[in-house]
Length: 220
Image (cartoon, rainbow, N blue to C red; front, top):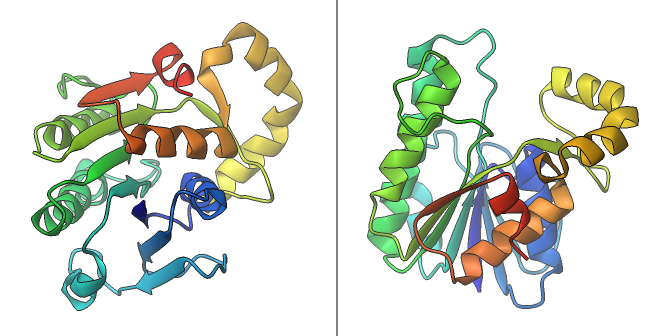
């Protein structure tokens, strides 16, 4: 399987990249971003572009792909709806349309967020925009589209978030993780487990659906 990862320098992206490089059934891993991830591997091809809205300079490298793991995400803190929509909704659909035109049999796995708003009408801005993005992707004629809505993600294997606030919160919350796992086991995962789950989803057996909580935890 040949795959592409968008957002491979973020916490979730680093997790799925690690699992893709370790998976013997994945032969080619392409990453696309403004910066390259620190990982090195013979099957890794790290591509950088100054503007993710314009992938034409690397179009030749984005063909014959079996799956896309889309893990680009930003915090909505301090952002207005227009700016958050541009990054979360507009960029996602721009990338998706570019890939679809060149890979009609692609499996698209989109990392959203727990409690995203599928109605796209609610009061919470980030949840509304995420829901709008999910709905647009689910209407696209990919081979499959799967939306994952992870809850609390525990970074493993030296992986860190690019958001400093999140790193501070992880340090504070880590002693409470066993308690969270007992109280809400389906809402707690790790970068390793989430990465493996996303690969499993891309391999097939799943169509257009949103996986959250128990449904996401039940994927093996």
